Amino acid sequence: MFACLYAPDFAVQAALLTEPPDLREGLRRSPMVVLEGPENLPRVAALNDAARKCGMEAGMTKLQVETCGGVLLRKRSEAEEDAAQAELVECATFFSPRVESTGAGTVLLDLDGTERLFGTPENTARKISVAARERGFDLRVAVASNPDTALYAARGFPGITVILAGQEARRLAWLNVELLPIGTEMLDTLHCWGIRTFQALAALPEVPLTERLGQAGLYLQKLARGAVHRTLVPIAVVQQFVESYEFDDPVETLESLSFVLNRLLQQICSRLMAQALSTNELRLTMDLAVTQRRVSNSGEQFQHDWKLPVPTQDGRMLFALVWLELERNIFSAPIKKVTLEALAVKPRTAQGNLFAPPSPDAEKLEMTLARIRGVVGGADAEGVSCVGSPGVVDTHKTASFEVRPFSSVREGLSKDGLGKDAAEKDRANLVPALLPTIALRVFRPPLETAVELNGQTPHIVCLWKKPGRVIAASGPWCSSGHWWNRAVTWVREEWDVALKTPAGIGFYRIYLDRVQKQWFVEGMFD
Image (cartoon, rainbow, N blue to C red; front, side, top):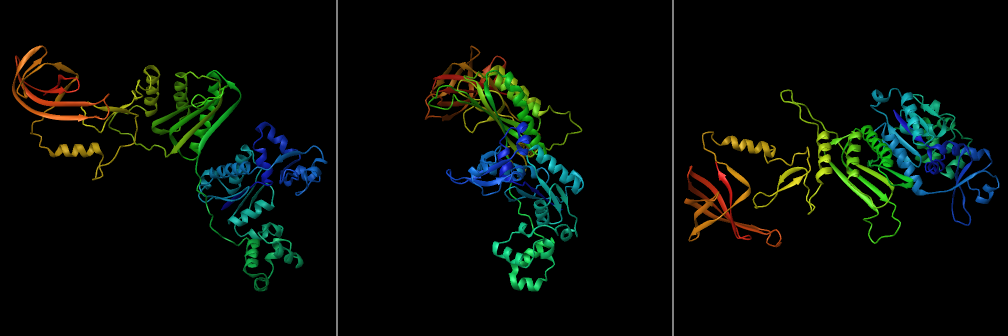
């Protein structure tokens, strides 16, 4: 089964969508026309039923319309109609993943496989109509066994129409042939023959009709019989989960934002759940009401991004993250507009372990990190993040690391398809268990020391203010880096030495920092 969503007088409904919801219903009952054309002579492009009852018609001039009195005038806007069409398509995607944007104010969707979710075709059509009404549309909804039958039923019959398989020709019989995609010349020919309804066109013999009107006439007859079965051309819907709110009067306190932020986040999460999606990135943008024009826009807008470790649909957790960040900031001007944007991703799928204790929820971890950032700050004086997970830096400099945000995504796989950790474990298992292993216990910070050289080799090392004779030494191993930046450059010579101490022979790693011209003990081998 296929469903068609048809918005009659689409240009009028698109203009009404820009009106406040509490006034929209009253304006729909009032006479309203949409004008287009040059400024000196605009004409009526669309009008509603209330305007037709007042005697107005399409093509009338603005002056003729104004003589009727009490009519609402709106200028036609392609941007408003495109936005309304996108809203209508989004409404349809809540009921089917296969949606075709057939034309302005017309959307077709495939209902195959949705019976368990929405019930019978009648119930589905009723739910579609209710959902469209909540978005501001007054639709005609038709359900049929093929797309074109549903299309012409929606255009020809008011309200909700359901046509079962085998009933297409009988139900479409009394529709006017002007609903078909027919040219003016062919329409005049049919009128000369006395053909004005679908039933009359469907009753004509096929061969004489084809001889006179060609294949186009035969195709129109099949449409009138409801016998055309075609494949939908679904659109690739680009989901953008963006919600915004603009205040009539700019607000100065965070308490005034709480209700609006919570509502916007709940709307985004509801849309995500309806599409079986989650989000792992959230962006908040707030426009500030700056009184004086500035050279840069940095003072006119506040923006912050959150990258979550795992996808989520929890609006309360997202609100808590946003609120904790806002409490840490002081704004230079009142807030006039709030915009929230979420990046849609697939939900997290994880299976618990029956033989291990449950790990903490990732959402709770992110809340804890947000509170820590509120106390110690998110970054240091150099802009480096100081709250997160340590990561190895691609450098030879010892003890170098960076702080990264927590993530549930594994960083990569080895060539054999195993994760990096698993591959390392497998390599470790290849080493015989009886081989001795050695570890370096690093001193943090490294210990300053004094070293006496015998030529170029360390001879005496002062360890904890006690000199120790070097029994054996291996080195030096020279390394350097960041020579292009004098502020962070490093040059060092490393030695592995065996020292004779009162407790016995100890093995240590020492190095000479050529920038500071100072010796250090980096660690002890164990």
